[in-house]
Amino acid sequence: MFARQLALTPEGTSVASSPAVPKLAVYFGSLGIALIFSYLSMLFAATRTFPQFMGFASGTSLAIFGLSPLFLSWVATEFFTPPDGVLDVTRFFTFLAILTGVVNFLGALILPGPAAAEFPIARTSEDTARERDPDDDAEAYEETSLLTSSLQSLTGLDALCAEQPEHLSAIELLKNPNFWLFSSSISLVVGAAEMIKSYIGMIVLSLPSASHTGNISFQVQLIAASDTLTRLLLGPFADIISPVPTYSANGVWAFPRKPYVTRMIFMAGAALLFAIVLLWPIVGVRSQEALWPLSLATGIVNGAIFTTLPSILSSIWGAPNQGRNFGFVSYTCFFGTTAFSYLYAFVADSHTAPGEGACHGIQCWQTTFWLGSAASLLATCFAIVLWRKWRSRV
Image 1 (tube, one colour):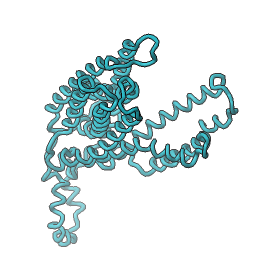
Image 2 (cartoon, helix red, strand yellow; image 1 turned 90 degrees about the vertical axis):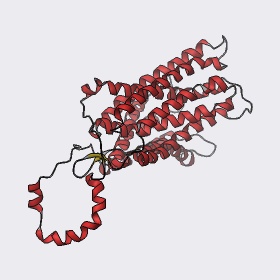
Image 3 (cartoon, one colour; image 1 turned 30 degrees about the horizontal axis):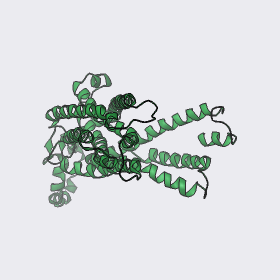
Image 4 (cartoon, one colour; image 1 turned 135 degrees about the vertical axis):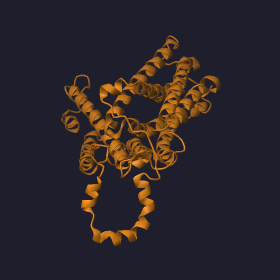
């Protein structure tokens, strides 16, 4: 519909006077809603397909989602932009409509649906005796020795029992103090990180440059690269050293093997890293080229939090409510992002000299970074408190 509306709009029509603007705004809003649906469907289908490798599933899914604009930008440039011309928006959006429609339709057919009840149905001795065939005993005995070691891990004999997740209703969840500690911890760190991502260009321009090269593009690329690599590497690494508990075949909620660390360590580590790195520009940065630790840490922190978030939510409050709980946490992140973004804007505007279009000097963001570091340190304390409470669960 967006492509059709563009095709029907006469060339040379002023944007302000075009009657198509309200329709295009509605279509863009619909695209945003569809994007969220597709994003969450991909993420939760991946984590439910591979429940024992939730870090790998979520990290890879999020990395693919983050890399897709790069691929689509190449497609637009290569196939829909004529030489010495501009992008053919109508044809490109038609292509996107067909591509995304086919991909999402196939995903709806292939990917798993909503999580069923987590609790396995326990088999009684009468059911087992009824289904047992005496003629199969000899053959089963020959295979027993070969299957024993693998069955032990599936039935929980060698597994480490974990505390059951809390299956709470939405109202009960919102009354749970641990949920608010967890959400606040993520909101404080993600809010500060999103503020850096949004204003990295202004932060770079507030400092002098020694090389006069594309420092803004370099910082943006560094954030994107570190974010993507963190998601790709941290997911499998977390699955190795900190496996998540799952239900075994006999209904035991347990870790498949002993975890070396709890996954809350990644949350606490990300918050502490950001608290330290936000102080670095205040203390030691006086040029654009010295900002790279801030950009690198922003990508690492953002990738680490969102890679481990689905597995923590599933372990603490159950997989069936994972999508709802993820949405609640995302709302708190929205408030954190909005607060830090407005804070940066107000501080920078108050230090902008009359007649200048931009703020220059560390005073443009010094107060914001101090508060961001304090917020990240507070988030670290929240994560440590939850680590002590949840160390037998995640």
